[in-house]
Amino acid sequence: MSATSYISSGLIEAYVSGLASSSEREELELAMAQYPEVAAEYQSCQQDMEQYIIYQSVTPPATLKERLFTQLDTEETARANGTYVDEDAIPETPVRKVLVSSAWRWIAAAAILLLIGSVLLNYNQYTKYNGLQQRFEAMAASNSSIASETNVYRTKLEQAEQNLHIVQDPSMKTVKMPGTKTFPTALATVYWNQTSKEVFVMVNNLPQPTSDKQYQLWAIVNGKPVDMGVFETGTDANLMQKMKSVDNAEMFAVTLEKKGGSPEPTLDQMYVAGKI
Image 1 (cartoon, rainbow, N blue to C red):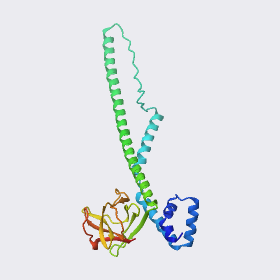
Image 2 (tube, rainbow, N blue to C red):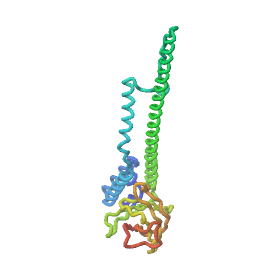
Image 3 (cartoon, rainbow, N blue to C red):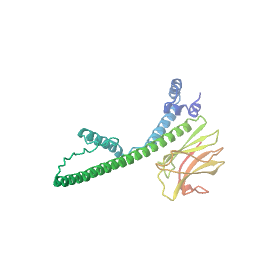
Image 4 (cartoon, one colour):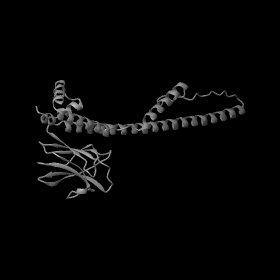
């Protein structure tokens, strides 16, 4: 195989993501030793993958661990002190036996004691009920928060798996778009499926635009710009976004336009561009 064949085969992406077989790894390592351009493409792909992982990483809230351990410590302390309240087995308050004599004054005293005992019993049960209710509400709120955060992580993982399948498709052509002279630090990548004509854009480094602006992808076909659609940026946007399909593209470029896009590209606002 030639250096160009190795670069377009998808073997480099499989090697970097750890999905290549041992024979494929050996073959690519020999090719990197033989072809400097293959080695350079490997280094570039590895850097793109590292940027992708960093971009997709989500840091759990700092208070999540503290809330869980605080809840566990509180229950363990209550068990050790004998004050832990089990919702399914609330201890019954002992009934105090009162000896009543035949004299009326002892009957009156017994009635007063029973009245006081009833008030104390009702207050004790009311306090226990309130404590259990507050504890239940706190645990329910904590469980709801944890479930919400888990769903965020699951969604990110599913998106990462979908993006990995796109990159590994053998029909996918990788087109890197470095920054222009006006915006030298900008960087984006287009993945163009030359079989299905599907196009995906990945934002490597583009500054967050104002609320009234939006980035727009263009394909140059027969020397003329063709609108490929606008795309989102920021932490809430999917790293790999599907754009309009195109055939016979010569290059791709990204400009900053008014929100919703423009029929013609604003050339002085071209951030990145890359030839195929």
